[in-house]
Image (cartoon, rainbow, N blue to C red; front, side, top):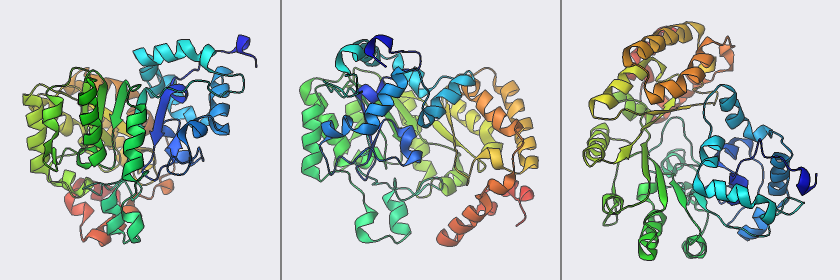
Length: 395
């Protein structure tokens, strides 16, 4: 299709101005593509500009410009079909994305390649270094998981660049950046995070929008405290701690955490007036306790919470036993009535209720075998920590 016939109804700015990379150096159009394992190239092995104009990136851009909805983009389009916002609609509203969309006709060649590359939004997972081994995660994004599984030494810590190349990449591209998403691994214990922060301060770019997904166990690293940076930040600063439960349940789910420390750090951020919106990974392990968790957040001064549905076969609530789904739905409806029309619950309600109301074969779930394996590995007992779930499983 020629440029004159390009369409913009399914357009997403990210394939034109975004870099998403994994700890092993593999890159993707966005983080949602991780599950598809398509080979867009590796920045540890090839020049980034060459990769960004590779065949798969060109095909994706043309697909969107032809008004199509690629399968790999279904998470966004499915959420939109349910009446929810999506990552696509969220980012398309930003100033940098709006500007990029306006520039598409001039910077995009008819084969889908770009004649000018400016990466305005970074989601670069520089390594898998992490101080936790969360039950829904794995060694790709957690060095603690890799070490626990006894993987060979060079796999315990994945890094997409050697340090010198990492810093060169940052230096070469930092002038264009307008938004950075720090995730991991655990970003607050990564050297690269503090290198970027120091560089932004040095360049006077404290207006860059920063977003964090952090386990919030540590806010200091090698003599540097992230609060010293956050207190001087002029741009939007969004902090989304990953918190799925409290107390002993939190310490089982986010293995390696210390709930008292996380609770203390969370309260510190609230007291200092930062924008804090916890992100809850919703799965079989915590589906009965969403109201209790939300009430905890409210009690410490947090009123907006995000919910992220776990899609894998180990924890997806779609494949929970029907009795558990029925009971969870009753509890969730009660939570809606008790808590009112709060932002987090409002946005997540359709997706949570759809999964709970949909009849599905629980044999697709690997939940029971998975938690048994974790218990053997760590000498724990899931059903002692979460006894309310025992009645739904034959154990």
